[in-house]
Length: 257
Ligand code: COA
Image (cartoon, rainbow, N blue to C red; front, side, top):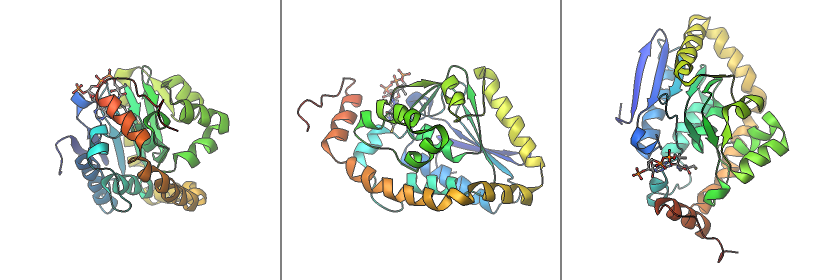
């Protein structure tokens, strides 16, 4: 494992991938994306891995991309660690389960759209504050979200960028079930182990069939969104938004057109 903020454990066919940078609310660095990408890539041909489970801890799933990393090493097209991770996740042929508690922001929500089963703690706050950061949706979320929940709900989540509850996530079809925080990971592990005990080839073919009809558009959406997202990171709206976050103040867009 190439990063100590991500740990992996394999038990009963379930590879648990745990984000563990709690002092920064599991904000994802380039090294963490690389570690997670490597774990998923190597799970592909490891017959001992039947299922991947992604989690943080009972207080925090993921506060999104590390905003300091965004400023210091903005993404460039092709081959960035986040792209490697998200493409590995969305192409992974085996089931992926997520156990989500506390906070899920930005890519912490986007990655859930590429998982198969999602269990969520009842106190979880989810948020996709892309516009509030002067950037736009990425990794096919602008394609998947309206299909999942309809345009007006997706617009509400993506345009207002306000935090929403686990109950809303359940109602909108983003998660399978909402449980007390201290029971979420146990439920996710139980479901992951059940998946891992089932016929592996039938499982892979079922997942392939579920995704087959949207795969090409999803891949097209990822590239199309990146064509906007990557340049936007270097523009004044994102710079002001991220600087304001780091300086713990409200952003000021009054001079921007
Ligand atoms: N990138 C970098 N650092 C982050 C971070 C991020 N995405 N999210 C949280 N942190 C850091 C904070 O700066 C803070 O660091 P400090 O202790 O050195 O000041 C620490 O994590 C704790 O965060 P804090 O804001 O004090 O916790 P909170 O519980 O009050 O709020 C959040 C949690 C997630 C709501 C809030 O931190 C937040 O809005 N983070 C930004 C989320 C975001 O915009 N992500 C990118 C989406 S694309």
